Amino acid sequence: MVNYDAIIIGTGQGGPALARRLVAAGWKVAIIERKLFGGTCVNTGCTPTKALIASAYAAHVARCAADWGVKVEGAVNVDMKAVKARKDAVVASSRNGVERSLKTLEGCTVYEGHGHFIAEKRVAVNGSELAADRIFINVGGRAAIPPIPGLDRVPYLTNSSMMDVDFLPSHLIILGGSYVDLEFAQMYRRFGSEVTVLELGSNVIPREDRDVSQAVAAFLKEEGIDVRVDSKVVGVDKERNSIAVKVESAGKISQVVGTHVLVAIGRQPNTDDLGLDQAGIASDGRGYIQVDDQLRTNVPGIWAMGDCNGRGAFTHTGRPALISTKAMEDVSRAYEKGETKGFMKILVDQDSKQILGASFLGLAGDEVVHCILDLMYAKAPCTVLQRAMHIHPTVSEFLPTMMGDLVPLQ
Image (cartoon, rainbow, N blue to C red; front, top):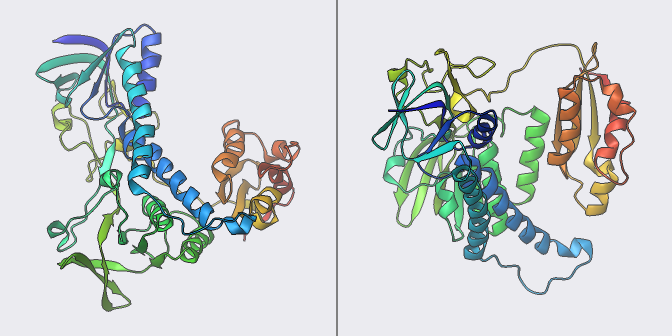
């Protein structure tokens, strides 16, 4: 048995950073990875999808180039093998960087294999037994496969296997209408596929506010994506060289026939073969490890972080609030770039004037939101932002104005 100060199971986003912090504090650390260094984000999530989205966006802009006074002669064609090769290169750079940084980290020992508990503070990997008083579980999650009749008899794609696609599906049917689904829907539509999205609920991305959900659905429909809500998938069949998806909507059964099916209806944690019972670690009915606000499990000295603890769920509370909205078509930078769809929305506590949250749907939203996040972490009132002087012309320059336009939330 080899003893360590800490054992980290998994090299997803939290694992490597934690290993570096612990080693810097003088700890002897073991980190275990059974497949790809970097976990979901680097290999099948954030990094590859954003690389693919960049290629899809380039195709979209090329097709719309005339709107900016640029003439593109002939049709815009997408070389999917080249798109995948670019994505693979981006991923490889990130994955190799994570692996290299861990294997050269003094004080950290890397084990490549399946790590699992054999006792409360003992982990087995590749025939070796490791022990530590502190163990951090960072095993991530994967696509959940629903028990849809016939699905097990047809080939289907998940967010992971989509990373191997180097061709253009003629008609991609996407089961689900949440974040992962809509990313792939817009992406492949811009690549040139016919795309149908089937969502069980009455709105896509149902965790978002209704106005955000409806606006996103409208954007997708404008790009030619067939978005169907209130649509329950009740069966899947092979139909010659195609796949037929049976859908129940408003009490009627119809079918959508496509060439490929992407299943993105929820996620599940990678805890089923982790030996949680051997360590006495509590989990819920879906396999998510139960933790408190400090990510501590019920077993002292064992923590669970990332997707495997299921703590990413949204919560909502009712309280007096103020709201401010701004249409992207009224934002100078968006108008200049010709990307005027969407809006910004900020919610503020009526009494404390602290920001409760925000939605940024449109140009540079992924960057502008950090102005809000920083203020929220500082627990500062919105008046701080109201007095700020942002650079012109930018999207964020409208945030101080929005803070001056707050009205009671109805």
